[in-house]
Length: 507
Image 1 (cartoon, rainbow, N blue to C red):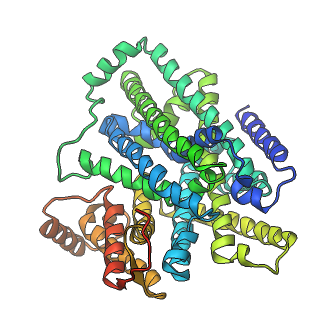
Image 2 (tube, rainbow, N blue to C red):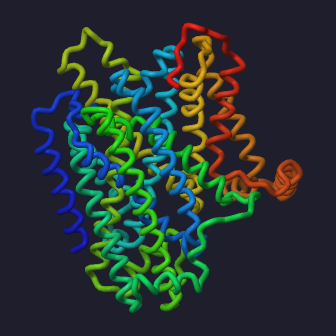
Image 3 (cartoon, rainbow, N blue to C red):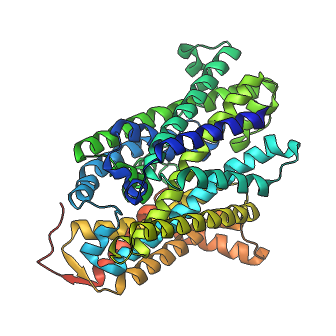
């Protein structure tokens, strides 16, 4: 029965893809012919930004950390203003299809390809890590009992994503993401409502019940800890700027809107709604933690929501709602990533727009080949994450973002706020150096975290921990890793650059 529901959901997506991809061409795939409705784009981006990891992991954190994640959500909201009023005007003024074309015009072809390569790396790892988590949950709680293997599940899911994004691209995704975001939010609201009813709580009393268990604290005040509120808010703002404003997948949907004013409305509405949705996810997490405590359920973290929804004796319709919400959270973060990576590779790396000798049929053939190739890469990455999974996937995701989006943020910041010129060959090597320096700093600072992943002798492990304590004196780098990486990138670019009065800054 559960498999039939999931297959019916896939059939609906394929039907939408068939309808929206009629008369599609390369411009439809890359930017939706710049005819996307801004409200649909804004709504669909909620599903893209939250993903299956948010659907599972954010509720699971409340029983351990309370509402502290909302600090990051506040930062996200602030970051959307910078994206709307600094980056979007730049992209529309230059009529960009790939946002990294800005780097070519400002800093040269090497900077352009460097920015694109870092996006490709980051989005590939981030999207496949999110996909892996959801497939892992489906395997553990649903498919294993049916004899369906992890490998077969991964292949089928990626094949379906490939099918419904292959022709329509952004033109299709704007509509499928809207549908999937609707299902995800409906699942969230229904689950909150059911948990309130099951525990005989009301909205005006549930906060008191959660506060009694210390689940409702939001702001952390210890400046030395990774969860310090200023770190979380400022880091959240920079994550938004980097992972939304400098991300081809997210901006590809925004620049498919016909004009700048509507795109800015889309961004600000999206930011506000996302903050509300995150709060509801946290509310659900508090309810799940209360329910688990009352029923003696020992599951925590990522396992809490699936365990209660599937294996705790709740009505079957709640299990169905959970699975629909989970699958709906899975696809917007995967289909958009696959499309954006195809676009970036075709335009930025292969130079498809500059190939005057390629006709529409040749360009479409190349695009299909790249799209299929990235599907294979996605599959291999999912299998890789299964081998290295140490139980802390959300930590890995944040570190991947800090390492790979930092150089992008540094490159764009240097180009936008300075008038300096950088040599053609420098950007790639300076970004790589900044990445290695950032990794070295984090490796020493967060020695305990890395020791969970790597194996060292007892003597070497102790030496590593002692070195960390002697340098940082208990201070722990958290979400600000992205800012450190961007700052190092900017500093290295500045040191290796020279003044050029002919360059005009945006600000």
